[in-house]
Image (cartoon, rainbow, N blue to C red):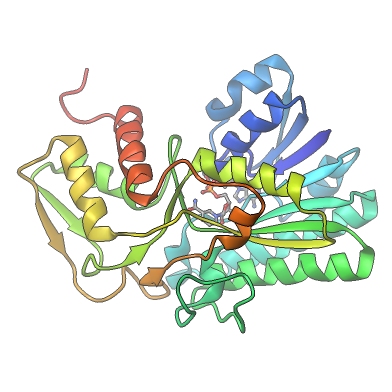
Length: 318
Ligand code: NAD
């Protein structure tokens, strides 16, 4: 199969490409390298299994030319920084909503039939029952990023209904693991590297969310795509439990060896405006497809902290 992976040089995309190449796919990577790194996929570029197109999804002609001859699109490119929407209000609209329009329209013009889309638990907003099942509604996101994910889902669903494409929409929990370039564990390690004596935590630390290890996530995507065949397939992907930000801070302090660090909370029930303090996805549908995760939230956090400390390094490391 010839796959187009948008955002393929990124954190989740590069792990997905590892799996696609392992199963024999040829991969076209469309990525503007705004947060992705070619080193994550260098072995596949060198072997010729993957080919990188340096371009931006907001440019329709670039998307159209990358779409030629593709069998399946994995649309992962997006602005990864939810907090950015508190300062810049058109990034998610352009990099999320309009970019997704360019993808589905290019699919229509090139007669590409299949798409998998990286959506998020944040589409559910903050008043959803926990754990939240896929059929919860109405979905009322409270961040600009969440709005762009919901808009992307709507565009894809409308292309399914109007132009007969087949789609898999995945609402991810918090995905963590090696090659992470953002997120709470990454931030905590960087803060402790800069000052091993204190760790500032945004909010009161009681925010509670599910964490899924990245290899569990990409294995889940491919498993679900092989085991569901509706025109539109909607799946939450997450783990069985949650962990608090306080617990993450403790684990990172432990794993970095900064045992003397004082953990200081900025206060308030959330990290920033638009953050959802408590989130847990219902994963019954994922489990019913025959897929289960290897790691629970806390195991995934510890595994990720160890791996990122190796990648980032701490003062005194050789
Ligand atoms: P990431 O930042 O590592 O990957 C995004 C990639 O897209 C990067 O390589 C970046 O360079 C590229 N990109 C961004 N804008 C682009 C544009 N306009 N044109 C071309 N390339 C562009 O982020 P990630 O964590 O790997 O996230 C992948 C997808 O999963 C995103 O859509 C994200 O919203 C979604 N998601 C992630 C999480 C998570 O916890 N990491 C949770 C829910 C959903």
